[in-house]
Amino acid sequence: MINISKTGILLSLILGLVASSCSKGLEDFNQNERGITDEQLLPDFQNIGAFYKPIFENIYKYKEPWEYQLQQNLNADIFSGYMTSPRPFIAGANNTTYNLVGGWNDYIWTVPYGNVMNNVKSIEELTITESPALYAVSLILKVEAMHRVADVFGPIVYSNFGDLSNAGVYDSQEEAYTAFFNDLDTAVENLMADIDNKQFTPFDLSYGGDYKKWVVFANSLRLRLAMRISKVDPAKAKIEGEKALAQPLGVMQSNADGFFVNGTLDHPLATIDNSWGDIRMNASMESILIGYNDGRANAYFDASEATGDIKGARSGVPLLPGYDDELAQKADYIQYSKINDNIHTPKVQLMTTAEVYFLRAEAALRGWAGSGDAQANYEQGIVSSFSQHGVGGSAAYIADNTSTPQDYIDTFNPSNNIAAVSDITIAWDNAASNEEKLERIITQKWIAMFPEGQEAWSEYRRTGYPKIFPVVSNQSAGAIDTDIQIRRIPFVDSELSTNAAGVTGAISKLGGPDHGGTRLWWDVGGPNF
Image (cartoon, rainbow, N blue to C red):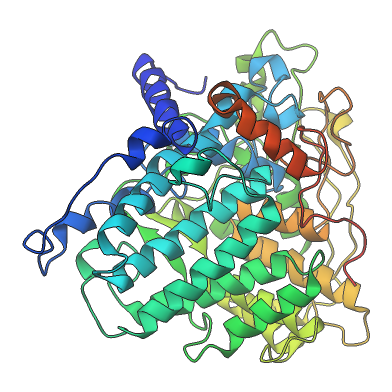
């Protein structure tokens, strides 16, 4: 089961009500006049600091594993090819088989709106004039949280959030991205004007109050978002990417620059994986890591109890014939590789330095100024990832020009066997086409970003890489193409019930039907060059 207790259900109902503030409830929200006085705005800023912690903890839900399971794990973590569930929930008719479950997917929306956007709005009201640098950090966190939401749904409520006259009006995804870049402009400008101030130190769960590192993260985030739109708006992408690379403090260079939320609780994957047994290694991960003889495989996953080596399961496995119920089937597949405890640290990984080197490698292919050499960045991305996970052998790995992803064999059900879908090797090849070079870059980037499935799924949709196995059972009734795979999540039930007019407007900006087969604005398909 998904371990949703009565208390959890009650919490979800409360959270859904909170989230509706992005639509019908905004009137009450905007009438909450705080009227802060000079005496209240004390040097320690404790009246402001309390709003930051829930933002950090809800970019994805950190404290409640079952909410994280619904917010990201039973969608992006699986759609990315990283993980899969050993259990065919709801008799196999669920997200993993493209029979999308509205009650699950509500959490992708309600968690960030109820816990990020509301708190950022509170910080804005208290700091926009009195402490612009504190406001700046909240803007960076908002962009980090909400670009993920836009990359799931497409149109979102962003620029109109908190605007009483336009409550519930969605931005198109293009409009949202423009707002993201504008917010990053404001944030970097504000921080650079007060760069040595340490007032944020007591509230910072990532960088110890160092504004220089926040600027570096903002630049790196800008580079990520610029690359995301590189196919749909190459001119805008180049401008924003070059702006990130040219900013004086630059982008991430050492692993200490990575963006992590430093918590004190176990990572939610630890509970979902170890305690509940609801997630295991994906067959695509096995094909690529084992085919490449990748030393990170044993840092990411434990050996299978069934086979004694690293073993993953196909995505979208239905309730198979011969099993009385989903628990009986789970008893087999739960023996496949679980996630290594090293990944279950209290830190929540949201952006790594390795990712930024791979972004720079692609920027070099696209001719963006300041990006450096494509091969050097590609190889440094691999080195950074190996170092991050305490794995040796990166030099030999980088030089490997023969290993390729391997075919997949299912121990329990041979009908799930499938041939490898890529023959891309590891070693850089200057003579290769830009398309082949990009497949190398994104494949290694995908490996390095584990376990952050949201970004991995987004990059798969943008580029088509790495090539991952399709679902075994597609129960979308034709809405989602098995080979093209899922492109988005439909607008959620809580919005349909409280903001129907807003959703109608959002669908008109989506460019297609409100189902999982419709491509997002930046997801244009076709070759990358």
